Image 1 (cartoon, rainbow, N blue to C red):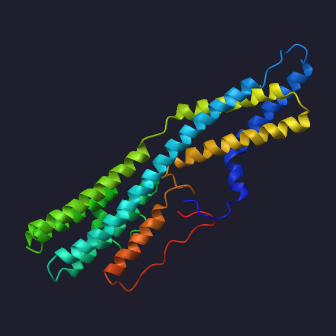
Image 2 (tube, rainbow, N blue to C red; image 1 turned 90 degrees about the horizontal axis):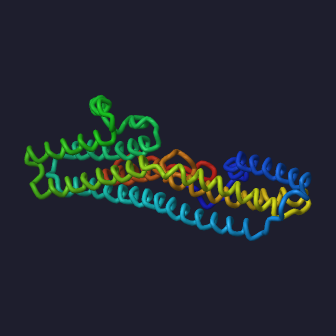
Image 3 (tube, rainbow, N blue to C red; image 1 turned 90 degrees about the vertical axis):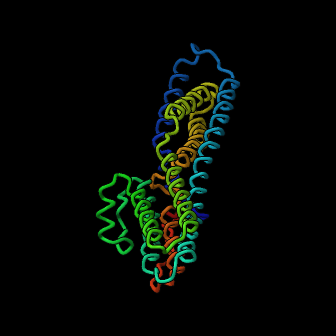
Length: 296
């Protein structure tokens, strides 16, 4: 997640450098052709690139809106995960009979592991990394048999809650309350997986890029000004379009381990801190620190 800090120019330039090279080649090519065949080419009115530029603005506006909706939905889902994780532990403490502190601690730590595992899984990283000290070796061996590691962790918590009910450490109402919280957590995981696996139409981006290049060509033909001014002007105008398009592209995929991601690692660390404080643990980790201009 980008922070309210100065973003390095190198980060911005790297996003559009290849597109700008193409724009440079196109502008120089058009400049050469219009100079060499000036009398043979018909005059192109500025209304044509103006019309294309308007179309690009509308398409970019739509894509930015849809991309932000995906990014904001992902953030809302992880906000719900924070709330339900806290509620889950408080419910365990308030609804379970006395003398089950160790079981509550095991389930709570497993919930912390679920948050980290889900974030890693969504980013295409190993879902079992950084789980040391949170789950037992027995649990780790159990979830390794599953393709969906976070789901396996939820299943283990469900089994422990069922065991508490069967040993009369929970009444039926309390079990239902805890099961409802587990269902919400499972629902949140499904929403994240839906966002991750639903790809924004690739053709939309390709067509938009093609229209921007067409705009550059038509504008270069229409301007007919000195090349020393025309080429930098075309690069500056196209840079604005490409940067907006890149911003939309990154926001539409909030779990790709990029600076624009939803800060799932930082959120999981916050959940870990909150839960360990609820359990009155002595070793509390520090909040996840930002990396330069973004929080992962």
